[in-house]
Length: 112
Image: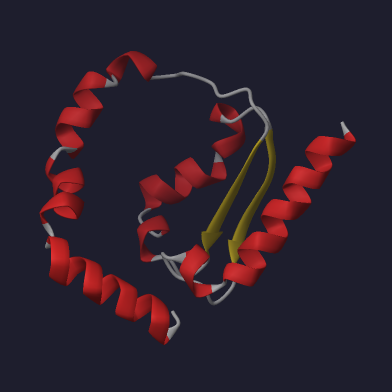
């Protein structure tokens, strides 16, 4: 991450604290409960997945299995990419690469 990005995050967490971001994790079980009706849902819209190959969150076998089966749930998946040397914050770590992939994806949508 750039020094400017780190400064931004430090400033924001200093200003607002960690409560908001942590609430997401505090509510994970509840989010699963209230979205149980979506189990087995299929997303048909054109989509793309971009992640980092070094993201530790994709390493647990159950998560890796979900990644490997993305096409099952995202039937409109056009591309899935794990960027080498990139961790969990792909957009912050390699913004130029992410932008290029997004523009390529959008251009392909225009062609159809």
